[in-house]
Image (cartoon, rainbow, N blue to C red; front, side, top):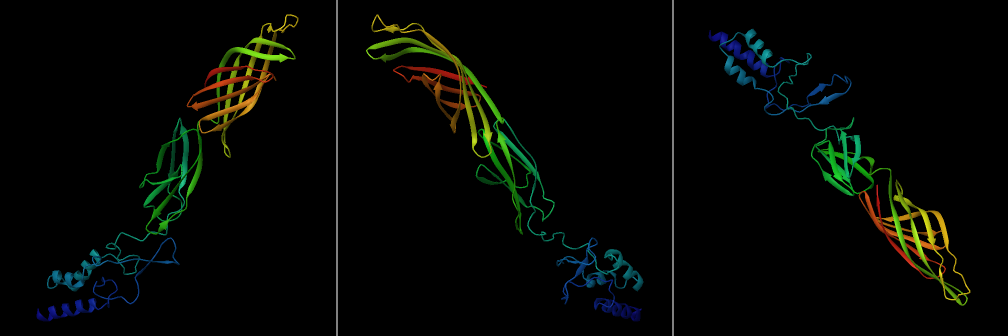
Length: 323
């Protein structure tokens, strides 16, 4: 019995000295070469792996539990049963640390969708096909950068216009490239229209004679806006209608101030600065027409002014345009 115990102890010591490749390595041993495990997807490129202090049980612990209780064959069988061999290499990976280093910075995210509903913009994305796993996403919008953890969608509000939005990812290895797309807030083309009416006195002098007329304007006004990628919001204003004046009052009885009526269509570009809209043009060649207004949502509120260019007289007409 004593001889058998000595024989068993000698075999255990021999196993601990590494004579059997199937046994686990003691954590206290210093390996001269790093442990390598072949990546099945790339047989020619060994992949380094890490081993922590708790990855293996020591042979001494196993021996203390089994010495004197099991035969040599049963002892080896128990070791092999608890520390399975991988692909015949003698290396066990069941106890390896699950954490691995990131495979470099994340790749460029893939933007899945980007759209606007009213004044709300929403865009979504997914992980890039290359690079390491993201640890956090950052969205870029309206000149701002904001972390959103691992969310894959983001929404914000904006006034009508064209916006560049983007997203990139970061992990412990660094920052990945930015993915971008453009979103237009509001319809590509919008039409606002309304009517106008106004009357007033115009005065004109012909030599020694002065005429006075009661002048009237009436008609329809249309504002057509478009979103331009280069210029933001641009537009034109179209006026259609008529102007009329009955026979005018003359400063001399021998001179007749004739009645008149005209119809007109006048189309001019508008200057849009933020919500402010301005337009200047001629109305039937007899008046200078100006418009100044404010665009808020589906409504434009402004003033159309007709200034008689051959004499004196101004008609000021409030105008409301709606989509």
